[in-house]
Image (cartoon, rainbow, N blue to C red):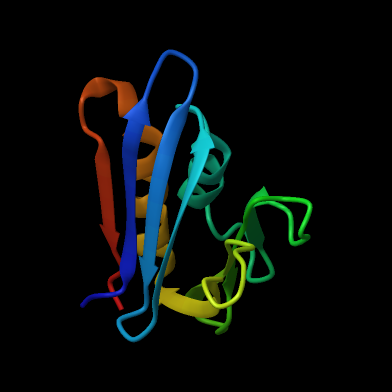
Length: 141
């Protein structure tokens, strides 16, 4: 299994989209479902298209909160970890389920900035209302 992200719009109506998102680094995988709208990923897309602006650039994307008051928590943090720009997506996910059914994961996917720019372009051009319900991105690492 190649490292990457798969985003599916599994329910789309006039106001909401139920997303199913899966992440893998080729060794570890996780997934989560959450509600959003057709613009849920628009800010992330814009940030990824121009990533990195500098070697210290960090992009964050968060759904929910890391507290039991929320049904789930997803944090993506994108940053450079090498001087030549090689980057990582840090994934922290917690569905706040009841033990032993809880799904809590923390791992990384590595990628080049060009691959992350492509993810940004893919997200910017993807519309769940257009009939294409799945976006698949595979890193170049």
